[in-house]
Length: 330
Image 1 (cartoon, rainbow, N blue to C red):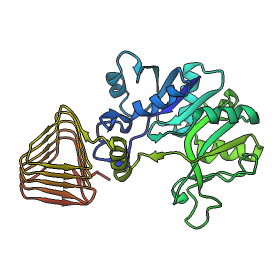
Image 2: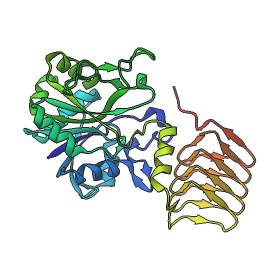
Image 3: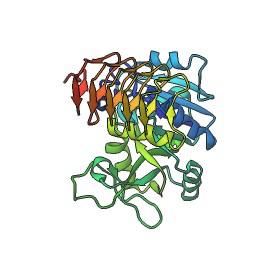
């Protein structure tokens, strides 16, 4: 089976980390996020992935010059313009010549849901499309999907107002699709699966869903990005073998990437220090993200889910709390 993986977004909520790097190429536990997603697909029988690329396609091509991602054959479908979720799926599937049942998923979701069970359910119901669902505390941030006892979707409500959600089961961003779904997606113009295609299919009765009690995280914000990293390195710890940590430094519950340095007397707690970053002498990083090549200089303090971008610096003795350096534009 083939899978279309959506990797075309700009990752604006993760800026400044994504100013120059596509979100799906940010590392989680020392490995690009996209590789975790593709690994999961491969474990469930996916033999080729089609990466639907928009922002910085050259970065993906440079990361996987041999046309394989996580060991799986990969091809690129480069959108000529942003086509939204349905438009991107349609463009990539047509570009790859997909004419059989296929998977589509978001490349910024990390999960261990049972894709094989989802495919089996899809085939058993004869659905045109089947959505994986997951349970969340605040469904107003997602596409809410009520179903009947047979799993038939009764409606699709994208980000409804708080307190007006019929269920806390939401769209988990993994779909099994028949090629007939492509007929519902316009060619060459933007279209949304969440706001157009799936609501129309719910009305037609051709959309089904299956709920999972699985690990699932939408890695779209600094908080979820940090949490995903910290979860994946437990309990063995997250200091990369190529990192340099001074014996007097204190690193606890954190990820320290390759070629990163944590200097004499520094403290790093519940944080992410990415490739080539430096935490200087007696500096403190608490619950924050230090981007690739960034420099937290001597005596500086970075706390409160601050995000320091690629190559940026926090000056000696400076305190950065709940801020971003540099501040995202707009």
